[in-house]
Image (cartoon, rainbow, N blue to C red):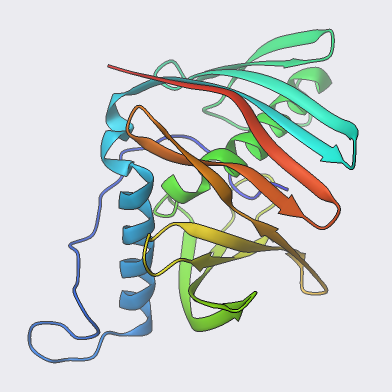
Length: 226
């Protein structure tokens, strides 16, 4: 479950558009709708404080029923571009500003892969305008009796799994992600919820995801800013 190595970069927010038309009564294009929707998500999630974020600590946990399948702790030094990943009795600090090659240490590559996956689950709403991300507006769809605006993400030769696609279901009242479809290939779609948002030093992050029989939680979260 990873599509884009989540490096924090300066986010250039789009000028907000209001309503369904621009000031000259010209209907928005689908691309403008997509960018408007993405801009709203970023703002609601705290993109304006990103330049001041120093560190993010969290534990990524996957449960299947009562069984803990994955538990990884991260101390992500955003300013330094490093993450200290701890899984079981193994702990390692990795460089988050690059991509391991096939000749790199396999443990480093595994930890980089873990960070890429885990941090994307935490910060995906803040990375919609990263280089290589393609945004497409898909209109409105109903999930569990509620109507959402749908934004599809695809990726151009970036990250560890650029073939992945995501459909983000956006609450029109909060501009927050309520669900997403994770689509690793055209024949597989997994719906995951985005719930239990927490306010953390200006960021608003989802800490609970239900996906089939599995539950993904973000625990022990702390965010330090300048």
